[in-house]
Image (cartoon, rainbow over all chains, first blue to last red; front, side):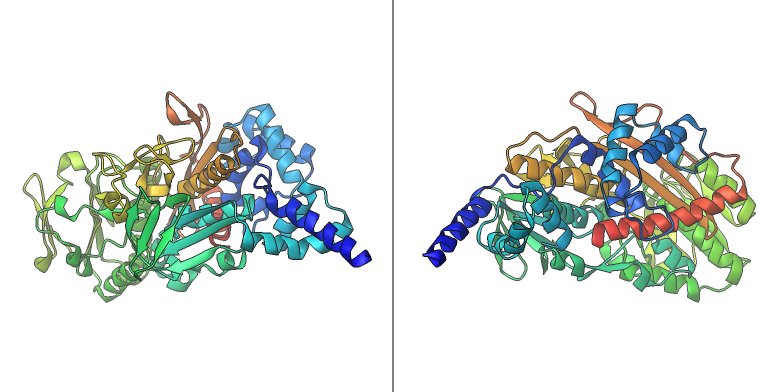
Length: 103
Length: 430
């Protein structure tokens, strides 16, 4: 009886997890669409293997402030000032939130 | 499915730790027995390899196949450093081991035919594969026929080295064999072509090599164009680093080649001048890669018109073209652009398969060029899409490195050029 029950549970689980075609591993959000472009320089999910700083797991406050300062030209940069000018405050916050969640 | 994806997957469905223990084998089971769709990606360069990776990241249940004719992709970025002698071919070659690891099926073959009606492709191995969605990222091919006297075989004598691989090695060997006092001719094509600043970085890094080993040599640039990417920055660097070594002839002043004599290494310009080089790097005019022509996906420009929001072909539904082969609005033909497009295309395909609306895409390009190993310059831009304009540059964003920057700034950009290469190759191939 107990074995039967667990087989039933297993079946339900199998149906639940394989029957649906709408399960996506990563929810495709506006923040993700914006942030994925950063990976070419900062690495996948903001984890850089080389000379360019990693930006994953930093606080929302730090990332958004840095981007806004790059944009204003008050924070020195080589290329980030030119990039940051392409984003609104709202977009900067979405990018900051996205990378803050990448551990 | 790797562990990170699995963790996210579980997080999304709200699994408890007990569920977590069960879900591992179940997820593996679901992957093999029930796929959400079959996507074939043809071309394992920056665009195709990135797209395959992100398709699998977005939806691990997708059946993703990546096809390329080589087992290791040799990048054009940093191939000029190989020509200069401070990188090896192995440094710029990338395999597909990580793709296999994440569950992408990697096939080494050539695609010979695309049957858009039955949604099948035929490989040179005789194998046929069916797809629900097809992504074509074939890069460029050359218009040999546009230059009088030129055939594909001539690239064995006058290498273009505009695809990474044996052509890079050939040009490197020719430069090494040349005696001091020789003339190197670099002949860049007209727009549009792959990597707009590439020929001028090449000139810089060949000059860097010659300055050390063959200082009496000269470089002559016979350009089809009247101006080129980052021109004031390159010109400034050449005057500073390689005074008297480099001469650029504009396309409007006799730089344009209309005939070549391969046997004598001679280029004839349309104004009637002739130039003989000891090493000739003739980069022919370009068009989209062979397969998209064969599949009938190009227009009269020889490139592929696409919906620039999803990169779906305007000729055949269900086929996406990314990277150099596509017409992508204001974006240049670069590895960076292809990487950016690969992710947008992956998001578009996964969204479409799952019946959800894709958020507005955003695209970026940054092209670093080295004028010397410790002297970098860049051009960057952020792009968006609108129905009227297609892909357009966000006003106020981007631009080139400042002209009045000091040596520390140039050195920092050179370090970031290397950092960029490490990051983008890990994003595309890692």
